[in-house]
Length: 421
Ligand SMILES: [Zn+2]
Ligand SMILES: [Zn+2]
Image (tube, rainbow, N blue to C red):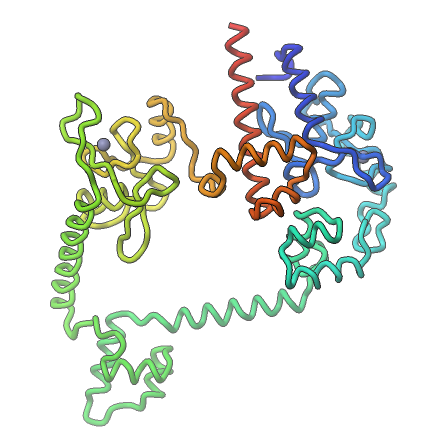
């Protein structure tokens, strides 16, 4: 819903949202810092959509939305991009904004900029601590934000000071890795050719073969002793038959194994076939978790593959949809269909079971812990304190809180629409 259509209640709720998720900083700037996630230093607000927090705050101050082409800018003496203090915000054009940046010296990097809050020594201290302690603990000890500590750790210093040597080193490593990878794969045909050459009356040296086939000499030795690539048959036809048999056997085995994990039950009188509800471990309390070719997968995905697709998994970007109501643990092949994400989303809405994709926090934070966390936040505790207290990572707590906030604003908008009808 557009701001123009907001009721007085919406405006109030929005102001309360900004108030609640920001706090006055103690660095003497008079700024109100954003407490939720940041993007490139700017706060992100989730209220009736996604907004830049400072732009949103300015719109609330002005009592109207900011037209396209206009920018929300911080007054030049405000040093924090994530500041949402109304008196630090102005509407302006891009040109004015650039003028501001020059005035404030925002283009000066590193310690020289008077906006850099922390000295190089402080950064070093943080990096030292971070070697042995968690980001949450380091943040508490040094007074830096947890997000910044993560950034420092990730970049090995200030994010915009790219350490050339380090970059070069990783690049070299990647290249070496790519080379190794290249070497590790010989085609079946290559392996057969190597065997043929080794079987000649006067075989070439292993070293020369290694060079020729871009492999290690030890690999050639292992091929000759059949310690490696033993699965490659000497002729292609028998290879094909062998592979097919193996796949078929594995599919049959998997079908049998799946049967031991499902309970057949009629969930809906209209069903021709009963649901096969998975009774083993579930993923996110919803889908059955089942191993296939040594990898954990959704039981419904495996079921579709082995019963309806010759054992092949669905192509990338496609999902397996449930045709039965509200039973994601079902792996009855007749209830499963291949579809894309968009169709899957529609299904869920029409079935009235809107559920979001797996979010990692759901599996760690239960209702009781959620209440505990919300109470801590209400009493003014910061995310990093919550993280330390609960033993969760800062990121987990942050994404959980953001998701809850998003849920709340969504319900809010829905209820407003219901009232105005
Ligand atoms: Zn400010
Ligand atoms: Zn079913």
